Image 1 (cartoon, rainbow, N blue to C red):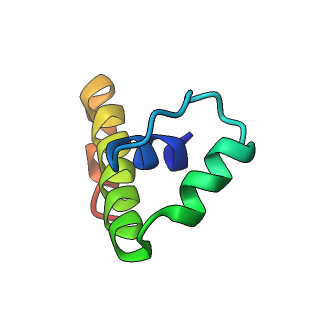
Image 2 (tube, rainbow, N blue to C red; image 1 turned 135 degrees about the horizontal axis):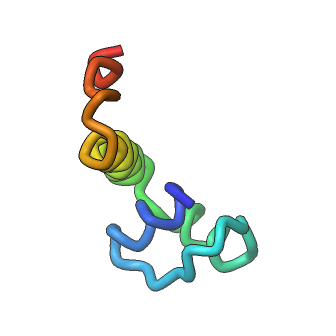
Length: 64
C-alpha cells in the first residue's frame, strides 16, 4: 500500500489495492530510485503521524 501511494505521489495512477501486480512493478522499475526512496519515507512518516492524530497517546513512539 505504501509503495503504491509513493508511486502515485510520483505521478503514477495506480489503484491502491495492496497487491503488487504488473502495473505496480512496472511503475516501480521505471521510478528514479532516489526520488522513490525520498517519497516512500514521506509516505511512511505521514502514515505514522496519521496514527498519532487519531490516537494521541501514541505520540511517544514517533521518535523511536
